[in-house]
Image 1 (tube, rainbow, N blue to C red):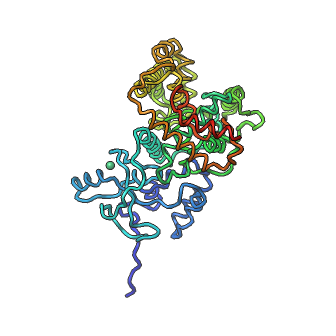
Image 2 (spheres, rainbow, N blue to C red):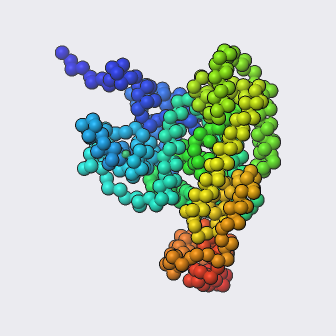
Image 3 (tube, helix red, strand yellow):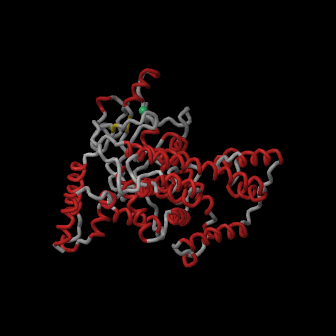
Amino acid sequence: MQPRRPEYPSASGLGDSLSIMREHTILPVFFPFQSDQQIAAVFQTIKSAQIGSIKYRLGLLTGRFGAEHPLKACIACMSHDQTSHGTAYWHLSHQYPGVVLCPIHGLMLRESTINRQWSGSFQWVLPSEASLAAATSPVPSATAQKALQQLGKGVLDLASCGDSRRFHPMTVRSVYKEALVQLGISEPERISASIDFAEYSSQLQPYPPLTSLPTTVQRAEAFISQLTRNPRGHCHPLKHLTLITWLFGRLDQFIEAYDRLDIDPHQQISQAKYKSNAKAVMVGATFIEKVADKKNLRKPKKIKPQIRTAILECLRNGNSKESICSKFGISICTVNRLLRSEPAVAKSRTELHRRSALLKYRAEWQATVLAHSDTTAKSIRLVIPSTYAWLYRNDQNWLLTQTHNLPSGRRGNYSNIDWHERDCKLADLVIKALSQSSKHQLNLDKKYIYRLIPALSRSLENKGYYLKTRNLLSKILQNN
Ligand SMILES: [Zn+2]
């Protein structure tokens, strides 16, 4: 009798290949920013025995976030699993690229040394301390920890909607542009935004697979401009999520902004009508909504009266449109139509959102002031520019009272700060950045150096400090 070839478990309780892919692999995180065509091809490949081309199809082999996805585990989760299940196992939530910290314990995940291209690939293995590599990345600071948690949450949220959402590249670009316009469109405002993004992205950059993220203002500008110009092909989801978490904080905020702009791809307005300045973007957004309203030829779905009342109740309570769509199985268009038909609900919803935004932004301002107790209103504004901008537009009196109570910037309680150490560090940073810069030493100017080292201008605002760095700068600039 011929021995039977081993078969993969199919309908035996683990599910078929597609449900395994959807529920037990990291693949769904790559779908929302991919084209339907590529996803269909991936599905087709999964059903066949040759799965080797999937990474190529998703652009992972040519992207800058790596195509290897090592197994990862959290030591605290392992010990918990050992106690409650008798053995440790690989958690799906730890495996996504961009999840660097355990979402439960906040500990750095450690990579497996087995099941890698160079060691025991295709080997069945469970997590054990002996097979986990020691961490090589630096222990994250509080700021880096926050940024990594924010990005990790974004990755998990994206994976959870991987099956149900597709983001059209043109609309995504418009959403980014609109959000950037909110940060200001003048030259200094745009530079300030790039500085802010470079600082955020520098927090994430030391941790693989995020090592290609920008750490200088120049690179930050190039990164932003790549994601806001005419999309050519599809970018890695981590690229989008870095920008999204910086601009919106959370993925659902991005989705809400996306749904406000989203229309059928055939109805996208032409590029000529959609200039990149504030006015055009705002006019564009209104224009898109009008086109969508006018041309929405799909027949509205009939909703039973009691369901309608329940939906309106959720809307009145301020629930997100996304959650209402999934709860009642309706489209975002239906939700928007209902909302337009009930101006009182729309009004109370707007007021609720405004109120909660007010509390959120006020709390953020106060927390930042507490965290930077020796600093000025101007420095706080640079740390949280979008919060400042929102409060300035919507809650100006409160903001003025707050800024009035802060030091003017001329004096400050600086007695606890080791200025000499800071000065030496900053001077070293300047030397290092300039030695790595591609520009010839003779062609340097002040603006270039300031853009190269985001921390510089802020530090030198402290008049009377950083003498070593000041001397160094004047020497460099004198030679030119
Ligand atoms: Zn854990």
